[in-house]
Length: 113
Image 1 (cartoon, one colour):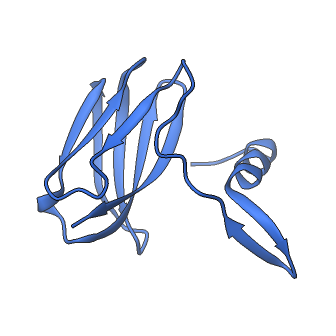
Image 2 (cartoon, rainbow, N blue to C red; image 1 turned 30 degrees about the horizontal axis):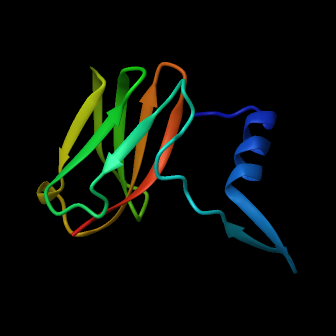
Image 3 (cartoon, rainbow, N blue to C red; image 1 turned 45 degrees about the vertical axis):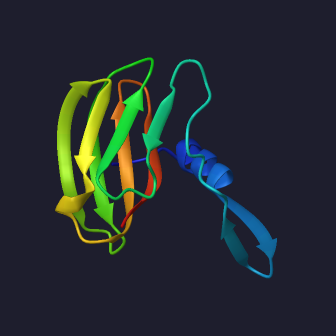
């Protein structure tokens, strides 16, 4: 995936805070979008079984589950408003969930227990 300079600057501005002394802090991730055009919910988080991913206003076109080491362990194309992942299929830990729709890509931290 490639980003234009303005897309990257927007991402960095919305993702990191400058604390001074050349230190960046990651801003808290938004768990569920509240905009009308894209309402994504991911629950339960942490998950001990089925992780539900729902988009109320458009179809989810693709999901990726990325391990903390950066390895993509699930890459699934879909055209559904609701997708489920069985967290029991993966080791306990912290993962990043990348959710694609027609007009948006969101990345959320999820925990499997």
